[in-house]
Length: 329
Image 1 (cartoon, rainbow, N blue to C red):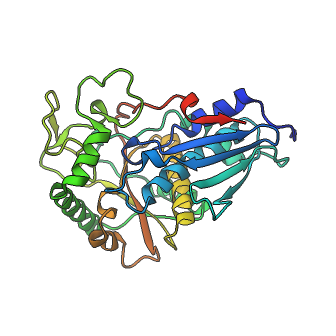
Image 2: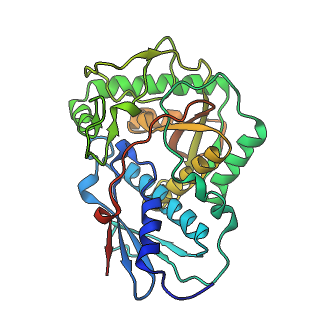
């Protein structure tokens, strides 16, 4: 390993992979700054991309930025780098979320490097999945990926899955009665088909998936209450495979940890032939968030509800150009 700072082209490629991460409403709430003389890449929250009605505490923002940080670590390992990462390095500046010292001289993380090819393949699928169980060995590998990042992933039993689906419906009803939340969602989700050219963020109509017919899976209906010509209906799986991702504590650093664990799970799921969609809808309301937790588990704070399965990948959502994300000093 060399201790020389990576060149700007290398860092540009790392940031492009980092920016492939999921984020709430695909707001992509991150910016990066590269201090090339010392080889340090910093990650910041973008205050212009917050969701004050949907995500008033910026929990979802931190989770999305944590996912971007995991992608950065994967891309760095695949490039033969061994970055040293610090979370929230300056308490006086809470928008300064993390920094990666790219000149680490240790060996690259081989487990992360193997996930490199999945970074650009991974995206949310809001399409119907097959009625097929996930093998126990695969579930354990996914749970291990979360543990590797300091979080917990569990697969609740059938009775608790039904409870979660009811809480999703409850959250949908609450959102329908909250005009500020609905307006915020409409601002970041685009019902036009096909997707408008030149739009580099938000969720395109092609990625909404069909409306559900006769079933209930935890997929947010971004077009709820809005006309969307050309969008059809489809039956979804009757028994969805649901996982809960959580942490022992519920502070900003824990949200960053959860984001890294979430993306590690999603990348490993992609490598294992699975597709996924994620939702925080029942977690966005204090009245329902506490009830999502499995009472027989040791998980203290649920950070994300994940739907996993086998089926079509679905279309990808757009990404902002790296030139809009990266400053080089």
